[in-house]
Image 1 (cartoon, helix red, strand yellow):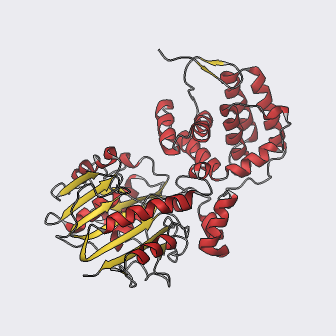
Image 2 (tube, rainbow, N blue to C red):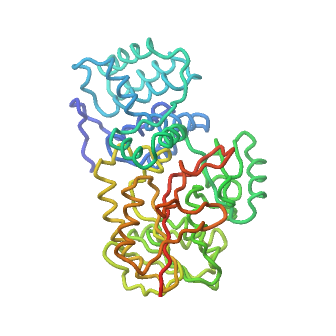
Image 3 (tube, one colour):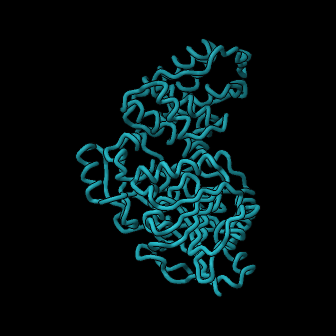
Length: 460
């Protein structure tokens, strides 16, 4: 039998928190993300399913959650200015309710003040009692009095000081400003067409006339959507017409230059987004090896290959920690892609909760991990074969520094200096190909996540 949980104020919670409307869902998810370490996407999906909200309310809850997480430090400063020392003592749900309400007051112009305040207070009264409801009411009345005359979406992502310094070192002031401005708003959903991109886009537009949509300008495989709902509910998903994959990740797969009949390893494959892209390139006459420490993720790849009609492509799954070794996998592969674990700072508009968890020493700590993985992955490459290293982070520690260290230790691997595919430019003077804030297609309504890619050819 589960034990009762005692809150910060000595109250006994007899059962898990539940939500009945969009604001309650948003507050509950924010509490679980910021205080319990939950992933925003998973917590939000679970709460939306539990609450069974209509699409419009589900969209509002989603907007509040991700919007608040992107500017959380700024929201906390606004709230702190209205608190006294005695007020500062609150539990996670009350704190999350204030954060959600402040985001609405400051950034969502279409929502009336009274509805934000009254519904937030009622929710706290139902879950925490009259005393804390009175506290929330007092704070929100102060915030309502100071509400901007024209609430507007955030202009920039709010970064911790250490992250801002690290990114400015890597990007420079101008690119950093563009990066935080682009990442202040919700990203589009990006799909990879498995068959005909034009036909897929036509099908989606016919089914979702109110959704924004278009072709990605860098990846020739990509389609972007806004206000489209859950990917699995979209037309064409069950038939394998598309996979869900961000544009930058698509470009990494294309950059590898896989050819029919080749033997290729996707190291740190995860759920296999790039594995499935490579499978179409090598075909039934090729051979794919997907390696990852998490066996549960790997086991999802065969089902995904079947869904998109590629079950005939030979695939081996290897649950192995590449920091330690290759698990006995022989070398002699034509191409090896290492999409290494990293801070993920290039993806913070999709996963803004990362900014709550990362620490100043994480780029250097993860760089050490990346060097170990890259060193072991290199042993899988045949003479004349290609090794590719990528991270979804723009920091120098995880990009140029790791690549330079590998080159110094492995003189038999020569940097590839030419453009890897027609969609991408050549690497810069350091030999690093940079995607995201460095590479923006003219007229694009979306921007890829920030990736860094370095490639070597093995001599011999």
